[in-house]
Amino acid sequence: MKTVLILRGDGIGPEVTEQGVKVLRVMAAEAAIEVEVEEALIGAAALDAAGVALPEQTLARAGAADAILFGAVGDPRYDRADFYLQPGKGLLRLRRELELYANLRPVKAFSAALQASPLKAERIEGVDLMIVRELTGGIYFGEPRGIKEEAGERYALNTMIYTEREVERIVRFAFELARKRRRKLTSVDKGNALEVGRFWRDTAARIAREYADVETHHLYVDNAAMQIIREPAQFDTLVMGNMFGDILSDAAANLVGSLGMLPSASIGRHHALYEPCHGSAPDIAGRDIANPIASILSVGMLFGYSFDRPEVEATVHRAVNDVLARYRTADIMEAGKTQVGCTQMGDLIAERLQRAG
Ligand code: IPM
Ligand code: MG
Image 1 (cartoon, rainbow, N blue to C red):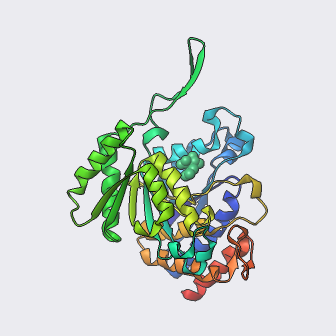
Image 2 (cartoon, rainbow, N blue to C red; image 1 turned 45 degrees about the vertical axis):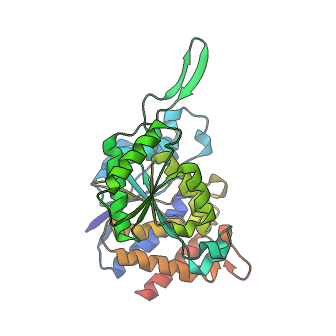
Image 3 (cartoon, rainbow, N blue to C red; image 1 turned 180 degrees about the vertical axis):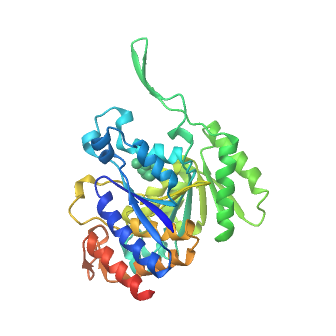
């Protein structure tokens, strides 16, 4: 028996997660895995109900679950609230408390939807890359931080800091993953301007000597941003710090269609959380028009990493591809396809998976 904790969160979080849970139930039955689904509050929903973005009870249940399926957090009602009352803080604290240090963001082209990309189809064909983002360190968590005042002048500061242990841990993780993929790893840093970047590069180069069977490259982050757009098919596995991973993964998501199609897995030694990379998109929330594919693909990753059933992940990707051949949500709509809403897209993929099984 496996327990999956569902954290729907805010905005489109609940509606896309609903479709993810649908696929979770179908695939659990197909794979003969007994899954118990629980729910808890996070983000603005938790701030409304309990005054904090990550209630202790949610944290305790997340720690006890076999896997967590997360929706999205963020609500404009809290935009002007104190920084520690931001809904996004709930997610950041959860990542940190559960030590989910490795965030995997796979960007894999859908052969049935090459035209959904703003880039030319011939550039997208065959794109299959994996961004490994360090998730519990770097400038997101470095101290000192804050908005302060000294001698009558206000200022804000954050600290970018990585220990050797943190860099080694994520780089090793990425090398191990690259070994199971096409044995090519690109480490991304800003070593030409920042000490942290130089340190990252030196550490990654040292670890690379243990992985002589993997082809290793080092790119500065600005160059990497350009290359990801210009020639994405050259990449296999990429590894980088927290903030660079946040930025480059949004850019990479667009390669295969929209941010609504990019899933992710956040892995630690004892816990794992699966989440779409998109945000809460409050402007389209509650209208049943959001794209649930990122949540559905995140469920595929859950089977792969938490239930050790990688073939299910591949099956889900294929089912999504098959459905995309005819049906599209608004964000990736094209002439000649049938536009459907969030619920219907979830139903179509779930049906397809039932038939495939
Ligand atoms: C992401 C998001 C988060 C991040 C936000 C919501 C704090 O953008 O998961 O990419 O920056 O990590
Ligand atoms: Mg982001």
